[in-house]
Image (cartoon, rainbow, N blue to C red; front, side):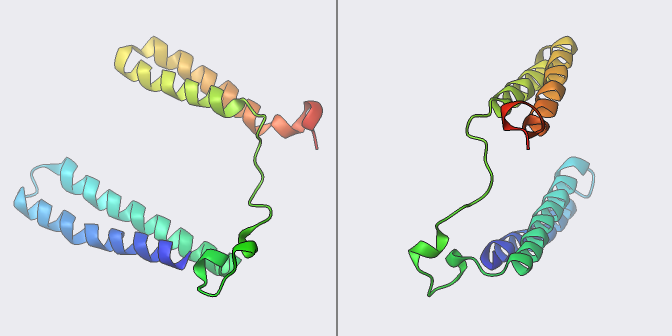
Length: 133
């Protein structure tokens, strides 16, 4: 993760002078542009710092080493729910919520309600039913 962290940190450090130059070019009268660039720099730096801390915690991955073999990356990559329908429901609810911002607030409320139901269903999926732990 060293390369990913360095890339995000480099991009974050790049956007700080870009935001400053942009602010001088607009005489600091247009607050959305330079503020968005500063926030973009902060976001990139936060991701870079997180990746660097995670890389120190888990050590070098096979794709980080030059002498790694292909078989070192095999095995379990994480825990995923291939049979779960909750991510689809949550995605549709978020799409409905964003549609509601453009169309009307009543559509947004239906999307937000469905999103809460989908999020609770996804979080507690392994606490009940056939797959309870």
